[in-house]
Image 1 (cartoon, rainbow, N blue to C red):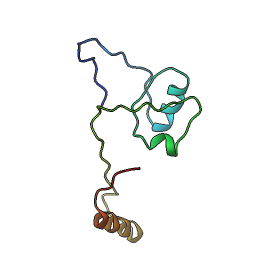
Image 2 (image 1 turned 180 degrees about the vertical axis):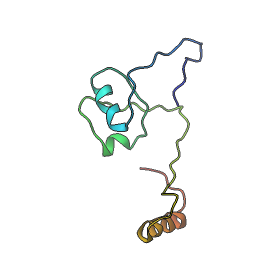
Image 3 (image 1 turned 30 degrees about the vertical axis):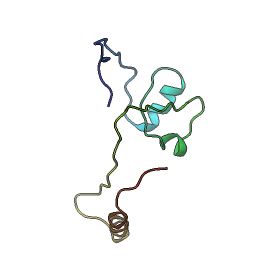
Image 4 (image 1 turned 90 degrees about the horizontal axis):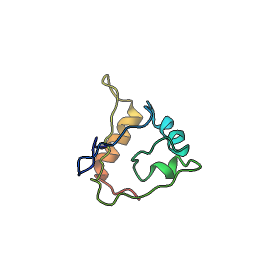
Amino acid sequence: MLPSQTPGGVPMPRGPVVSTFHEVLPVVATGLGLSPLNEHSLRYHPHPGIVLLPVHDAPVTEWVMVWRKDGVSPRAQDLVEMATQLGPRAFR
């Protein structure tokens, strides 16, 4: 998702290392880095000082459902079945 160099071969230095999504937001807000995010991120996780700039030529990202290897609860199974019936959806 983040190339190590530009198409012209110029290296792109890396910013601070973060481990979680919630660590990304303050790093970006303080100007210590930038990060690609899915469009809905700022709808559900708004943060002062962060602006979303669309990347029009980026590949479309896909989301999948995951669950524990040892099984899924009946309630979660209902969600999986509903999502399977509905099929892929465009996020708006």
